[in-house]
Image: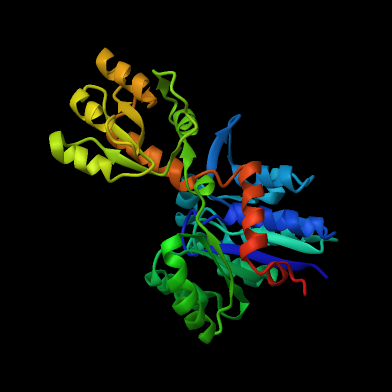
Length: 354
């Protein structure tokens, strides 16, 4: 009999994909026949005229699946789909039947079926196919992934537990910072287990999964690099160059693993940022090149400088999306996640073993 586990999260970008695929690889190494499905494609990219979700593509590669994309991802949850559903042009009953038929075909002769949830627990509500609905449809156990920065994150876990009910197998906290582990272990875990919500793991925050390299950021932004400085430093957050003088320097010096995003004509801000060790690169907007003095100083300090054509606001939004998504969707970071799960989670409970 196939065991089905649906992996969902309290919010977007909790690491569901990396965790699902890491569990799939671990299960396969134990000799289990593993299947995968992401019923609602939400991480959409345009590819050869088609809108697809990249997560099933990675799953097909890493789990050696021969299923077609329309089977792995029967619903492309695009803005167009949402608009059509709201207008009554998508039939929830027909969609449910399509999803069920694809699931049964993919699950046939599998020991373990991994179902990846959408961006959050609400997605799919307009067609009655939230992750809670899917768990009922597939008779699945649910593993909930949640970030943990403070005890306040417990509210989201409790809310999700209420919606998932008896199907919730437990929660895995991901990207837990060093400063948060003590309160998690001493207070939050006993509290949740007192509410009969098992905590199946607490995965530490690692830079490899939390950020992107400067080079990856440049590629994602379509930026032109103006310096020969190394681009392997990690970026986890962004500073906006909207101030000058001493206040900017104090602000920049408090930053760690940051990129400055500012107009290409703001040489005053750029010069100040190059004095802060926590600023790992400059992202200059508006297609404007900096002065030769700024480029020369950046070369001397080994700080990459890149130029993008978009405006500052658009660049900030895109850059934050890139870092929020992180590097959790690649073979290398799935391998890193596997190691974290083996060391910091109850793999027996997650995979149904002893």
